[in-house]
Length: 542
Image 1: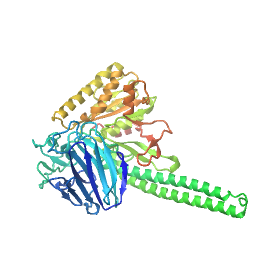
Image 2: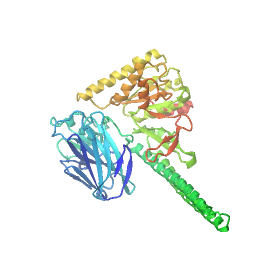
Image 3: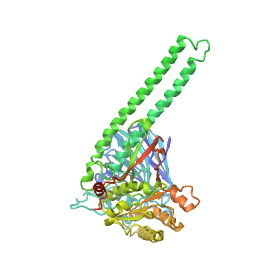
Image 4: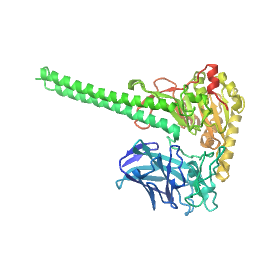
């Protein structure tokens, strides 16, 4: 049995798998059959106690059974869900610790332990997803404080308010678009039906998994995973070949009486040939894989939203389409060939980015690129940007951002606290509304750029930023911090703040490790082109 970690995935070999879960609280288990956009197709794709079966998916008491060949052919995945049993009084602190299991051939193949930290009342525990003709299992662990109603809304199931159902009161959904289609007429149960058309609301994820992904972002992460596994296979083959060659050469010369004979020479030549053949095969396989991934990336670049596309993609000249992530740069490894894979993260940036640098001015083009992508990621929302720029490093492009700036960029350290406190108060009010059942999904995308940190900031400012990390998702906040890595700072607040961020290195030779194989990669961060015409093309504020 494999003990999974969040984001980890493994292949499935059986045709029938079974999902179950245990927790400190009483649980209901259910399943969602979803398309590429992680939304259900129609009402019949939500499998729960009131509708216990769909094509290839069946609920039996406290287990979900999936017969993989019978799952609808256009399905991308089956999401396996647990939620608080509405018939049992709510447990303080939500579900508590949950252990999810997946069985193949009547034996537990994988186990995933989840410890929610924010009172989550519903969880996507596991995802059984299609990869070509094969199926794989991913550990997700994505929690929803608003309960099952919010989780369902996020995946295309409309939940009608039901006074008897607390979960249905914690979130609301609205249709958007010029001509939204009617909801499905066949309802799987009281208060639940599918939502047709685009969704305006998004669930609050109290503790999202590291690989919280959607359609465009998922495609790029899948390519990254393939690149990582191909790279690991190449490295493994090289290591094995080197060890085998060393062993065979040692054997060839181990007998002093024969080490200088023609037979020993022949053995050494044969060992070297086997080594060369193995490495040549491994490198040929890796080159084949890389060429295929290059073709996939080129095809994807023509269809991805601007926030995920390359600077040269024609999508930058088309109407902006929303994105589930942003592109940060490209990952590569010189010793493994020329393949360069986009490195992308979800938006909003619920886990802040920290740009490691001693010089804010040196990374100004990197911040410009980040802003260009963030501005295009949520075209359906109003965007407001707060910039703290004590050294004036971003003056070359902030003028173009005037339509979305929430006040002039802060260049005086005495103004930092007031601006941060305003954001904190907005987040606290949103949290109060959310916990009282009156909250709604953010209608704005807020962006905070805190440069030159922590120099010029008060210790209370670090606390304010820490508060925004905890609550910023309630106001749709993406946070970017620029400064030297403070993970070992003597100020515990600053150190904890630094440790909670996703750090992006700016020094060559600083590796990042992929989550599947642990292979090292170097990162080239995207930089915003500086030509005036291109600045206007990419920094689109409407």
